Image 1 (tube, helix red, strand yellow):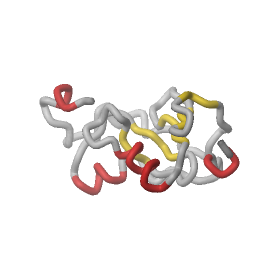
Image 2: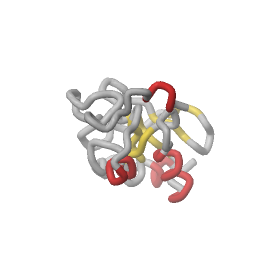
Image 3: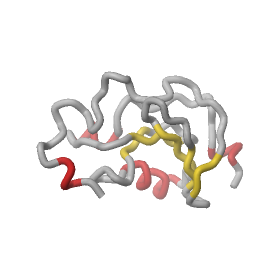
Length: 115
């Protein structure tokens, strides 16, 4: 894999929450950041799995966790954790943003909706 194209360290994240869930009034479990374009999407445990959908649709093969305290990269090409450079801040959603989130959008039965 050509990480030079797949990982763009100077590209800022698209926001503090999943782009598609936010637009639709939905919720997410954990967040992932596209290492190429900065798109923030929800993880594969989340109901809508927008990070993987973004990677598939746009051919962007690497994500980084967007959770506080996590700095791992994942390659969809090899299905494994890979090393990557430091990305431009912010490196995670705000510490006061709840998980799951966003505040006020998470249903009472959220656990039963996880994948």
